[in-house]
Image 1 (cartoon, rainbow, N blue to C red):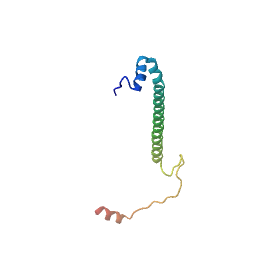
Image 2 (cartoon, helix red, strand yellow):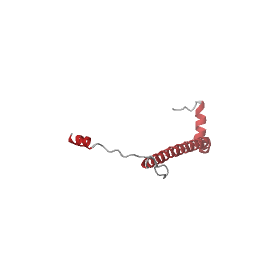
Image 3 (tube, one colour):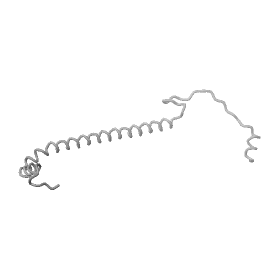
Image 4 (spheres, rainbow, N blue to C red):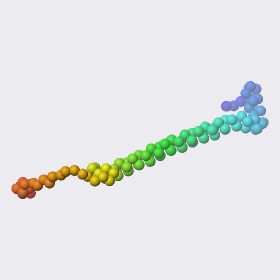
Length: 102
């Protein structure tokens, strides 16, 4: 955008160009606002990352707990032995021979 000497905004622009401290005075609140906004987004990102990492850690902990629980025998809970009745079943010898022939 080209400004002519006679336009109303040109005088304001020339004043800013002659006084750099006035330019910095105007830009300082903008720069502070940008730094605060950047800090806010950085903290929000760190918080999101922390929650995500916590979710991953909890998921791994839960899977390890589930796998270790599955390795234990289903009847033995917390180190208690199995207790119950049982009966031994013998197959008929003739049935076993017929099955082996097939």
